[in-house]
Image (cartoon, rainbow, N blue to C red; front, top):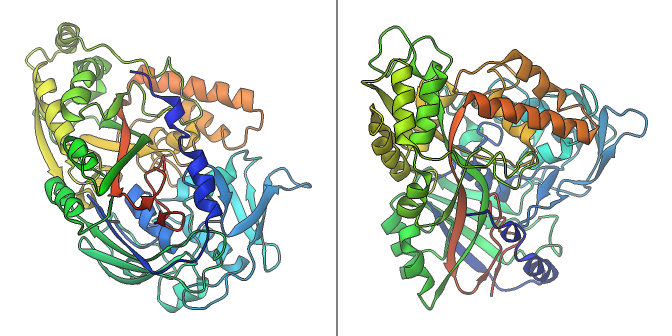
Length: 531
C-alpha cells in the first residue's frame, strides 16, 4: 500500500477558515486525553513528542509549524541569512511579548535559552550541533553563527523553546534537568513561557490544568477560543475511549484502532485522521563485543549482519498492519516517512518476509539453534506499541530467537536507550525539520557530546560521521541531497534498524470541535475552534 501523499496536506482550506475566524467567543473548556503524559516541563530536557506537545501550549520557539506543517513566525517575525556573513542567520524578534509572570521578552532570553539548549544534559543539542555561537544584536535582534553556512537552520528550531532568563536564575533552573539521571528540578514541574496558556497546576501522570494567558501577544491573530485545558493521561485504551464516549473528555489524540468504528458511529463524536511524520522500528546493539541480556557467552549475535538480516526478513509487516494495526499504518522499509527530504520509494521498499532464508542466515552465522535476548518496549507511547512487540516475539521465535519481552512506561523505557542499557528495543522517530540530517544526527552518528544521543545501536562509522557533519554547512542542495542518499544507502546496507511501519494518526473529538490533524501529532490549541 502506497503512502497517500494527498493526505499529507489535507484540510489546507480548513486552516484558512480557522485562522480567519479569530473572533472572541465565550469561555470554552477542552478536556484532553492521550495515552501518555509529558515527561517533564523542562523545555530542553527531553526531545519527545508528548513532552513537546504540552510545552507548545506554554512555551514558544522563534519559529514554529502550523497544523499543516508550514513554518510560520512565532517569537521571531523575520529571519534570513546575513548579507555580510554566509555563516550567520539573523532573526528579528517580536516586540511587546510578555512572559506569564509579566517579565518582558527580549534577545537576552533567546541567547540564554539557546546556550542552555546546547549543554550536556539537553536533549535538544543535536539540533544546534553546527552552532559556533549565538549573540544578541540589540534588544530585539538575534544571530546564530554556524560552522559553515547552514541552509536549514530555521527548520531545526520549531521545538526549541525560549525561557525567561530571570525566572530561570531566580528559581535555580539555569541548568537543564538530567532526566536520564532521575533528577528533579523546579523547571521540571513549573513553567513560565510566552505561550497562549499558563500552567496552573500539574500532577504528573494524573492531571495538568492550563488557563488562557490574558496577556498573550497573539490575541486577534488566532482563534484562541479555548480558555481552559484539562489534560489527563489515560493509559488504558478502553478507559480512554469510555471517557470520550461518556463526554468526560472531548478530545483524544490516540483512538485505539479497534475502537475507530465505535467512536465514528457515535452521533456526538467524529474521528479525523492523517499519516504521521513518524516511523516505528527496532534498534539492535550491534557495537558491543557481548550482550548483557542474551544467553550467548563471549560474543554478540547482533554484530553479525546475517543475524540482523534474518531478523529483518522474519518480521511480517503485512501481518502487523492487518492484525495489530487494523490497517492504520503503512509498512516501512526505512526509518523515515515520506514527509522527509531524503525519502524515496526505492528506500522504502519492503524486505519480503522469508523464513526459509532467515533460518539459513541464522545457521550460516552459527546460530542454527538460535539464542535468547530481551526486547525492551514502551507500553504508553506509540499506537499499540506493546502489541507490536508481542507480535515480533512470535515472529522471532520462528527463526529460533527466543525473545523475552519487557514492556514498561516510556519514562522508564527511554533512559534505557539514552544510557545504553538495552540490547534490543523499540523506538519511534518523528522528524520535525522534515530533513534526513535530523535523523542522522540523533540515530546514526556515533554517540558523542554533540550528536548520537539516541543511537542505542552502538554503531560507529567515522566516514558516515564526517559526511553527516557536512550536511550542516552544504549549501549546494543537489550535492547535499546526493550525500544524504549515500548515507541512507550505507545505513540500509548495514541494517542499523529494523523498520516496522509509518504511523497513522486518529484523533477523536466532539463534533463541535474544528481542527486539523497535525502531521507531528502536536495539536496547537490556539488554532482549534469549539463551535
